Length: 130
Image (cartoon, rainbow, N blue to C red):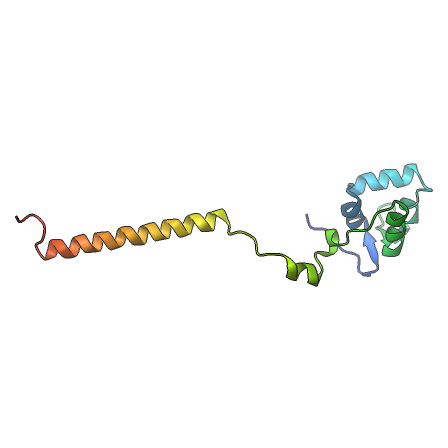
């Protein structure tokens, strides 16, 4: 799913927050209206006066909320892996389709080699004479 990122890297959009906490943006909006004093949803900043103006959260507020819950924020869910994590990830196993295509190519090359041998022997008259 693609979504718009906050322009300020210190802030989160409702989509990014939803990805971190595992809730849909509509659910966050509903919960925010139902419990205005919520320790996280109540800290939203509305960018504009309209009812559909975007909601933003400071990353520091999200970190504080997770810390109060006794958890750490997994920023890789929205930022991707860190450079160290990306370098330490072992290479993935080959794709099953790529493996199958390699086997098919090897088989086709083998069959082509046999057919070329048979054609060469047939031209030389090695077949059909006893």
